Length: 124
Image 1 (tube, helix red, strand yellow):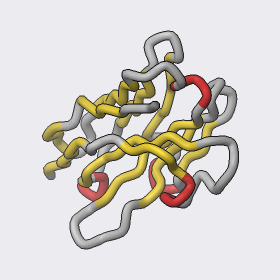
Image 2 (cartoon, one colour; image 1 turned 90 degrees about the horizontal axis):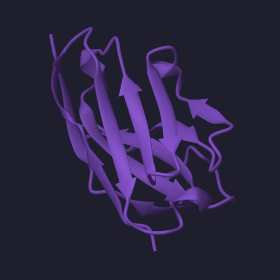
Image 3 (cartoon, rainbow, N blue to C red; image 1 turned 90 degrees about the vertical axis):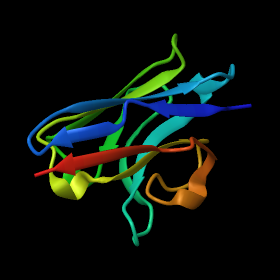
């Protein structure tokens, strides 16, 4: 069983940085690909970035390339999202998700488990 808990959200000024964490209390974390999605008010949940189970491959949405970095530490059952050069349009609730080997990285239906979300607000 995977149980995901996000942390690290908050208020940051435009141009600033923030690091999110997503920890799994279960024992099977390393078997799953992990991703961060975000959902702004009135919008669908959208893919931000993903990382394979070993950390060997990563996938980024065009909107965050060069600004966000995903990493994972399987020994700590944790995936991280380092966000820098943040923009107002990055404001959203950020969710981490865990997926198996099949399914598109970009589709929410591919993910078996989700965290509760953490709010990120970027002010101008």
